[in-house]
Structures are given as C-alpha cells and as structure tokens.
Length: 255
Ligand code: 13P
Image (cartoon, rainbow, N blue to C red; front, side, top):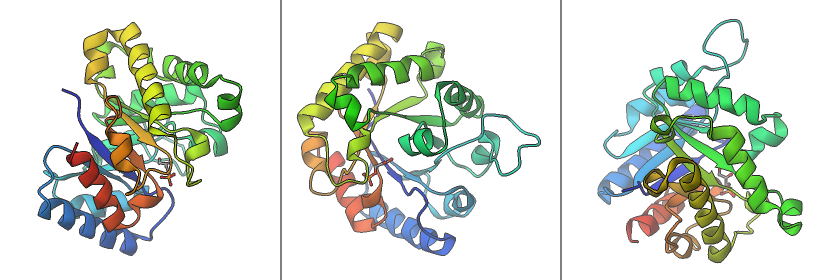
C-alpha cells in the first residue's frame, strides 16, 4: 500500500526562530489530532534541519531538506551534502523542484547525481516534475513530464526506485493561486503511474506515492485528494501557517 503524504515546502521562508515556532505548532497539532495514516513531512531550509529534528516527534513528523549537493564531500564551497542532511536526522529531500530547475539551472544530469547521493544516504526523495504553461498550451505536458521521469529517475534499479516519491507540480500553478483542476491532476497522476508501470511493473507503480503541488490549500485539498491517483500534496505557501497546513493534513486523513 502506498503512503499518503502531506509535505510542506517552506522554500526560503522563516528565520531559525520562526521556523522553530512553526515546527512546534505543527508538531503539537499533528500529535493532538493523532494523525496516523498520513505521513507528514516538513521541508525546511538547511540550517533549520538539526534544530527542528530535535523538536518534532519522529512518530508523527519527518523532516526534509529542499536540496542536496551532487557530490559526496570535498572542496565545494557553500554546498550541503546528502550525508550532512541525513546526519541531522532528516529522512527526506526534495529534488528537482521547478524553482531549482529554472533559477539554478538544475538539469537531468545534475538531478541524477543528486538522487544517487540522496539514496546512498538512505534519504527518501521527493522528486518534482511538471510543465510550464506554454508546454501545456502546446499540448506537450505529458511528453515533458515523461522526459523528466525517464531522464531523472529511470536509470535507478527497482529496489532504489522504491525510495522515490513523485510530486507533480505544474509550474503555472506554483504560487499563482491557480490550481490544476482535480481532473487535470488525476489525468497527469494516472499518466505518471502508467509510465512508472511501463518501466518498473504495476506492483512498483501501485506502491509509488504521487503528490500534487501548486496552490494546494485548505479549500481545494479535499477535492484533489478525492482523486484515486492523488496520494497527497507538496504544499508551499499554505505550509507556512500551522492551521492551514493542518487543514490540508486533515483533508488527507479523511479520505
Ligand atoms: P505553492 O503551494 O505556494 O503554490 O507552492 C507549491 C510548491 O512549489 C511546493 O513545492
């Protein structure tokens, strides 16, 4: 059975002190609601990871980085390795986010290396895919997402692919308040699962969690999570307020 996951991506928000406060609030709310059948993840800036791992109850919340280095260690000033991320107690890393692809030039070859480093360090990878608006308008969205999957992930052997969570984040829906309709989300998630099945077989595909991201909020989460192939969400803006994030977790729990 694949996991239901609600993951927050804080992006470059919250000072350490603000982050600690938010993590405490989320932790308390998730424990109070006794959320058991949803894996709740919070994706914080690197420097928050060690502190926040000390605060949250690992039975209820997993902590994620938002990136890691392509290399294992050495003279790479300013980089943070997957081993360092794992050493903070973090269990996940978000890789291939469209903001990293477009602002920091992360291409398939770079992402293959980052995924390898993450898996070598026993991190679970939340791997983001998604098309820009022009690609959707040109009816190329399936082709684009397939190419991101094939070139970023499909060199992995099946036993490693089991540690991949896929997040479909249409770039035109990120931070825009414009969400994909549940029909559009389901159509793409179904396509992603089919594509995974063609490569790794139906059993692996059925065990792969596929999250939706892009202006997912307390109001639309319920409708999105009602779709059979939408296993959860990768939440940006709405993960920065404990009540909003909690409402999304509850929506996932209730389906
Ligand atoms: P928003 O929820 O702010 O649109 O961001 C989505 C996202 O990019 C999560 O990774």
